[in-house]
Image (cartoon, rainbow over all chains, first blue to last red; front, side, top):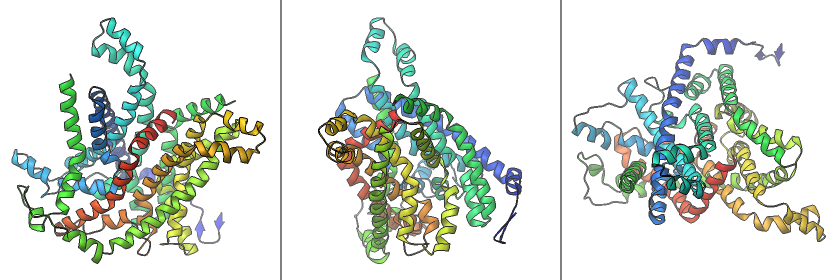
Amino acid sequence: MTFRGEWRWAGLDNYAFTLDDPDFLRSLWFTLLFCAVTIPAKILIGFVSALALQRITPTWRAVFIACALLPFIVTPVVGTLAYSWLFRDFGIITWLLQEIGITIHWLGSDLASRALVMIHFVWHGTPFATVVLFAGLQSVPKDEIEAAIVDGASFRHRLQAVILPHLRTLFVFLALMMVMDGYRVFDSIYILTRGVNGTESVMMYNYRIAIVENAVSRGAAVAVLTVIGILVLLVPFLVNTWREQRGLR
Amino acid sequence: MTLLAWAFLVLFAVYSSFPFIWTFLTSIKQPVDAFALPPVWLFDPTLAHYAELWFERGFASYLWNTAIVTAGTVVISISIGAVAGYALARYPGPLGFWLLMLALVFRALPRMAVLLPFYQISRALGLFDTHVLLILVLVSINQPFTIWMMRSFFMTIPADIEEAAMVDGCSRLGAFLRAVVPVMWPGVITTSLFTFLLAYNEFLMPLILTATKAQTLPVAISQFGAEDIRFWSLSAAGAVSITLPIVVLILMFQGRIVDGLVQGAVKG
């Protein structure tokens, strides 16, 4: 099949090439590792901070929420740059670590570079988890908590029996959003490491193939493969909305 | 336990805001002080970097590009989103579900999947590196989000309102304009804010779809010589300048943003 003479029918060649490319597999592996490390960390820190916010006075709550939201609302490029300046060879964090006897060149090894981009992603994404889970905590039924306290349940028991089950949907929602965002991570890696030292995510790989190497067809194949991956992750969402829309009748 | 909560929150607040505080300090330091290790806490503040940025580096023209693109995107997105969201919140047929699903699929698309076609089409049509192109592209990318969010808001407005107006003799459109529009402002403001942030902060699209004429702030900032240590203070001044409009906006609408996030979260 020809298409105006310039496009040749390539069948699945572009896909086969991509799936065979060790660079692609490496970037996929790194992206999955990236998600597996950052998502639980974000949700855990977000949950602990939401619980902590519950225990302080409303005025201070507003102050802390404002501080915590900063990484999330500031232009990501700027936030990433601000963060990266701390970690340069003459940056203050690198210097502080050196003062206590740890010398790290963040762009000097795979481990350090990967840690750098992961810490950044956690830093950037935790506020969202904090706000959502804090909002969720407000709607935990008070009588159930009081009943548990009357029954002499410890904090841990209340957590397990009342709070965690109540927040289940929100945890699922957060995980879904974060999987979508983590799977598509691009901006921060582009700025922090340009994808060197084993920090090339799938989107960075896609960018390199399509824009830098100008192999448009292969780039499109990578994009389609990514879409398929994300669609699979969306199934729980579909079910929920189907129910909601049916409820309208 | 309360003490532990405080300790954790203070740590959390420092961890979240320190990079920004540090950037602000860097932007008003003399270059000598900016690189001093151990850091200098007492220094002569200077606004020289801001002056250079605004008057010699053409920061204002990037700001102008960003302003046009953001304003265009917000106005068009919200107009379409309001009408579509209203229809989807009231229409009970199965088509509504499939339209929402379609929107969600487009929301989930990686930027790269739509970027390549946009790039080639814009080259072919001669729209490359123009404001119009960026507005069109950002509207199409953000539309699923605006439709979903507006729909969530309209779902919270009871249908009785329009029905009562229609019983009183209004047409469907009249009922929408007289009964629904007056109560939908909170939803419009919240959705506009998020659309504003999405357009104002977008990086990848303008990075690839502009060259010189229509380049926006995030792209310009990322290329302000951030690599070179001598330009740290200048880049920091750029970072602070681009952040100011957002901070002003957030301070104005702080309560609403949290409400909006919560609503979006709970309703999907």
